[in-house]
Length: 63
Length: 252
Image (tube, rainbow over all chains, first blue to last red; front, side, top):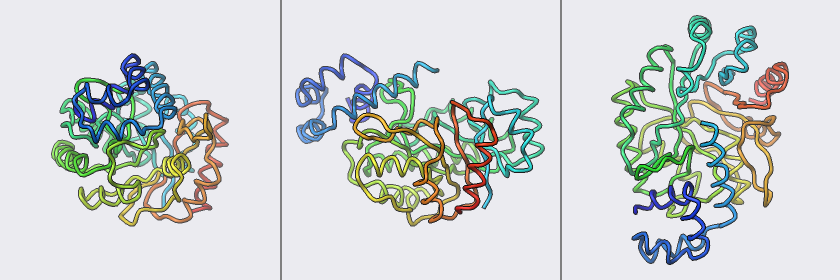
């Protein structure tokens, strides 16, 4: 996965997001991202991620 | 400065009957096909139109979708729009549709993709878009620019003017703890809107609430040709929206 594809998966795939929140580093590495990328992703604000994903889901539902 | 409002079907009749107080109307490109053609023809004859896209995803390392670009070009041509705009966002990746505007990694790879996509957009549509800053709840990972320097780099690299959304700027400044500042690059237009506080005292840019004082304060610091009020639902009496436009005129 590219970085953008990884972020898109986080925003749209609930199961993928749950795996990531549970173990960010392993999920990022398994997707083919680098150790540096995995470290950066592990520092994400997970509550903000949940809120953003909920907001995107609502937008998709309205379409 | 001119002051206008975003066209929404629910507001259509009120907008059409208030054109003496509205200098321009912003039409969402993706809603053009579903809008009342008679109303749009009337608008086209009586007020300047600017077209606003939400689905191109120009700020991406992936190429812009040609069909979406062609659709925007048709709307710009049909409406005889004086300008058009799109967001500094990515909306899909690897075939996954996010469904809305996601803040991209603010780095040189995104900037290079954006430059390619803007060149293609300019070629297909015939004019360059104004580029709008987006609100986000997530500080985008893989970023090497802060928000303001990103907007300045975007304008310099693409040659495009910004559509500076002051509520998006205010929301991000609140959510990530920086001082909102006006980018020092050409700003062609401004958006004003309102949002709400959610968990963690974050600001959600939902366009469902009145424009907050902080946005009017920012408006006093910036100059642009056009200011557009955006409202996407929970519509108050139209007089309240006209009152917000009057307040914007007074603040600018």
